[in-house]
Amino acid sequence: MPPPPARPRLTAREHDVLVSIAGGHTIRQTARLLGIASKIVESTRARLFRKLDARNRSEAFTNAYRAGLIPPGPCAGD
Image (cartoon, rainbow, N blue to C red; front, side, top):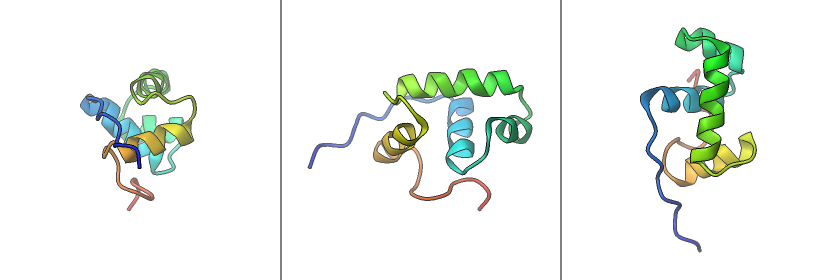
């Protein structure tokens, strides 16, 4: 079994966006929930993909889970 990936350092905003999107919220819903513009959510998501070495949402969430950044299953709206 491979070792867990290194845990990237996330800003509070990056973590909030990650948890919201991992919980099933759209970019627009995440923006509304966090009180920020959709463009900020989009740029934050792109930065998260780079930090998590991911090419898509599924890979980003898998890598975030393996790094211990999010719990398994839905995160937002619980």
